[in-house]
Structures are given as C-alpha cells and as structure tokens.
Length: 150
Figure 1 (tube, rainbow, N blue to C red):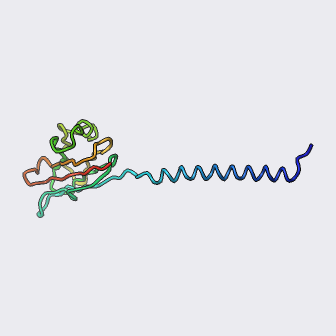
Figure 2 (figure 1 turned 90 degrees about the vertical axis):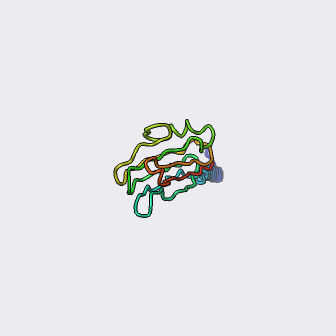
C-alpha cells in the first residue's frame, strides 16, 4: 500500500522539526561555551631607566588559569621571584610547578636580552595576592603583585 501525500508531508515535517531541534540544541551548547571566560595572557613589562626600575603595570588582576608574560624591555637583567610568605597558604608548590625555568624556589631565571620573556601560568592557583620582585633590583624597589581571582 502506498503512503498518502498527507502521510509523507507529516513525515517530512517531523524530520524537519527534529533536525531544527537538534540544530538549536547544538547552538545552545555552543553558546554555553562562548560564555565561559577565555583564558587571558597578561603582559607585564620589566623596565629600568632614568625613571627607575619597575614592573609595568606593577599590579595586575587575573583569573585562575590565566597566564602572565613578563617582558624584559630595558635595564636588565631582570627576573621574577615570589615571596613565599606573602602568597596564599599552600600555593607555593603549584606556583613553583607553573613557573617555566627557575634558578631557585619561586625564583625565575634572569632575563638578559631585550624582549626576552618569562611566563608564569596561574593554572590551579588559589585565589589571593601573589607578591613578587626582581632579585637584582629589589633594593631599588622593583616589586609587583598579581591578584588572582576565581
């Protein structure tokens, strides 16, 4: 027995509705992903000149999972060293793992070349304030801080 034109039209309409619903559901999943905050790279310049030795900006706000890239602009050598007693309790081991190359506990290597970079990942860190300094220029008050938010 042949299906009637009415049955075929209902079938076609049903397939179209199911397809549209599947497409819409896929779109809402995509929309959810778009609302998840993207991980950000924050750039901090390391400077030494007639105006003094400094991180610019000296204070940054970031989220867990972001990355901070330090760039040696002038007046090097510079590095990034964190004070273990001024970061959130229990965060030292994670921060140490997240630092690229180190020359000691929570102390990054010296950057000697212009535009050389040093990256610190904030992945898995506890929210709070992470104070740091440049070891060669600590006496010149080259200090900074990262406020990590959830």
